[in-house]
Length: 467
Image 1 (spheres, rainbow, N blue to C red):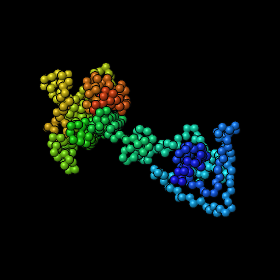
Image 2 (image 1 turned 30 degrees about the vertical axis):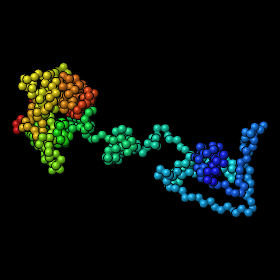
Image 3 (image 1 turned 90 degrees about the vertical axis):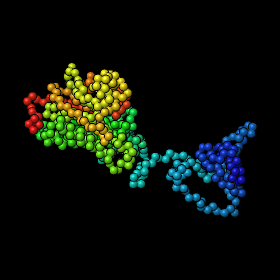
Image 4 (image 1 turned 180 degrees about the vertical axis):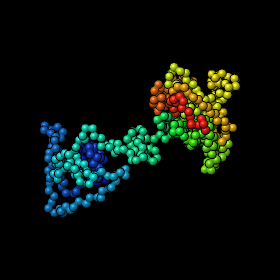
């Protein structure tokens, strides 16, 4: 009760001398805890005397200088103050702030305010010694010290955040600076090998990219170059379609890199590569680690994908496919008509081939994109399609999934979407085509590979012609 009574009798804060309102528990200026003010001693304290304003009226005027009344001679000598131990943390478990004496307001022994001096800004050096105390402005163009730690280049093999472009990416895939989750590696992939380039994107509607590609180059026995592009599209209704497309693309590419340097005819090499890719996808359904997970549906829902590939070697363009991914031919001379070089393994293509519907009717049907051929353990008898062409003029080979050709279905539409300089800048051309699909809605994963075709000089015979 004595502390409460002491509070109501205070008119000025003991910490900053600011006026108080009746009933205040804390000073509104400095936050002083008024409940902690010690009780007044019984002897005569130092008090502030209010002097009436000139002219009376009962309104107090400015406070006079406080008068100090000495304590009686019999009063005991003051001993050292027993300060309580400072807490190492505050109420939020954060380290308690440390203040220097000059940073805190106070009064002298007579109650007068201490002189206010501007303390210099301090910068503690790494060795623990304070600096000169002067605040040094950064030189023009110098990096902001608040972000300097994030602009440092990442360690060898490290990644930079795609959002803030400065923070490092931790092993869990999050930026250490802004916390942004990084896209998965397969969400967007690009590769260029000079004579071939490919781009794959997740699209705007799918939660993952189930497409895959492989591009490579090798040499034939005579030393002439051979360029390869494989594009695969995972069947979304199947289990693990992303694994199926990756396995098929990688396996087919490796098979071609092994057979072409031996002198195998490119069309035969493509046929064998598709068979090898099919076996790789079939093996996914038989993996012991996955067998229990998919045991109930393994035969009707095995991993599956489509495949389309192209080889440029010895003046020939060889293609192979299973499913509804496509190859288009776009001549460099846009006055010459482009062409589609593949026929879909799909319900719509079968209806057109059988003469039951025209192409417009078939592709308008909701069953149009149901595929009738694919790679997978539950596929029907595998029938790889291969074809060989000998172009008489330079052009561009477009190898793509239906995520692109859905937005440029006819050969003329595809040629119109291909940039005029794509034969000189294949990677840029592939990026433009992926952007064309995304601008159209991006309903599916989008993958495209571009191979600029150069006509072989007349009289040059391919190395397999005498094999």
